[in-house]
Amino acid sequence: MRVCVLISGSGSNLQALINARDEGRIDIVSVISNRADAMGLERANRAGIPTTILEHQRFAQRNQFDRALCVLISACHPDLVVLAGFMRIIGSAVLDPFKGRMINLHPSLLPRYRGTDTYQRALEAGDREHGASIHFVTGELDGGPVISQVRIPVLAGDDKHTLAARLAPMEHKLIVSTIDFFTQHQLESGDDGIFLDGDKLLQPLQLHEENGKMILK
Ligand code: GRF
Image 1 (spheres, helix red, strand yellow):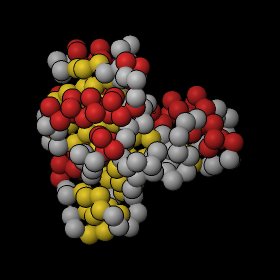
Image 2 (cartoon, protein in one colour; image 1 turned 120 degrees about the vertical axis):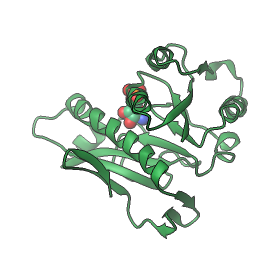
Image 3 (cartoon, protein in one colour; image 1 turned 135 degrees about the vertical axis):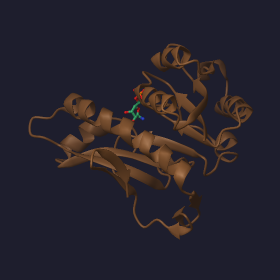
C-alpha cells in the first residue's frame, strides 16, 4: 500500500503512520504540506520520507494550487492519499483523479459537526460521546461517505482541551487501523455509498479493542 500523506500541522497522525511503516505495515511514499512550518515535515524528514512544501499563498487562484497539488500527488503513484490534519479545501482538479482513493480524518462523529471547533460544539450540545471519523473525500466539506469511526465518552468536567487530548491517541489508532483495513479488504466509494468486499456498508466501521488488539468492525 503506497500512501501519500497530506499535512498542515503537528503531524501526530503522520507519526502514527510512520510508526506503522516502521512495523512494515504500510509504505509512506511522500508527505506534502501546504505550510512550510508544519512540524510534521520534521517528523517525515527524520523518518527519511520525501517531503514537498506547496504553499497555497503562492497561488493566485485556488484551482492553480489544486492543479499543482495533483501533479505532486500523481508523481508518487499512491494507492491511497491520506489527509491527516490537512487544513485546506481541495477542488475537483485533485478530487476527480483520486476519487475513491483519498481519505480524510475528521475529529467528530460525522455527520455531526463538519468543519472546525468540533470539541466545543459537542460540549455545547451536551453530547455524551465524541469521536473521530475517516471518510472518503468528496467536493462537500467533511461530507463524503464515512468509512470508520472511534468513539470516546465525554466526561464530567471536560473542556475542549481535555476532550481533544483524550481523542488524539484514539485518532492515531483509527487512522492506522483504517489503512490496515484498506490493505486487507476492498473498500470502494460508489454513488450509492461504500462497498466493502462487494457488499454495501450499512454503517461506518467502529474501532474496538479486543484482547489488546484494535479491531474495526
Ligand atoms: C486531528 O485532530 C485531525 O482530526 C484533524 O486535524 C488534527 C491533526 O493533528 N483533521 P496532527 O497534525 O495529526 O497532529
